[in-house]
Image 1 (cartoon, helix red, strand yellow):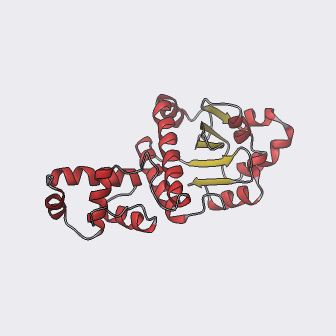
Image 2 (cartoon, rainbow, N blue to C red):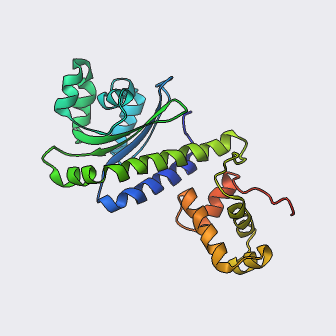
Length: 240
């Protein structure tokens, strides 16, 4: 199944929602579709669960005008019922069902990755007259596009660890120093003890552990250790 690890998905979703928090109460969907095999479709969203289930069960990504438009574009775009209806009469089923869940318009950001995936981040806009949220989106287009890029990179990187036998790629999710500190923290060592073991200052330990927490999209070191252990991200040290 396509991106079906609940732990990773929850980490990515929590990180995405934290990034979007500064823009207000936003309804969003982050979706990924394989362009070579569109049946491979994945979505994280705070839309109504019923709508997401209906969408995925009926493979609406094949006829969704937002996804179709995204396939042939790279720039973000605004959409609403009128724009979608003009695309094709065959697309009215998605439009009419979406209307029941107040999904009548939005702003979609697009990313095409090197694994033949289309990734989109759609933010709902109730109407073009909803100037508040629309202005926020337009004024922050570059930042929101970067959020999509960062979140998608996190998703691909975390799943990449599983696909490559839980070993880090050459470029690495974590640096050598971050892994050393992560390793000793997972062994129950305090920051003070880690500093002595590695011959560095305690503030340096805190700095690198903070980077680990950020890269894994979690809230604290305890959650990072739990995720790192479950995904086998922590590499044993050569001298241990």
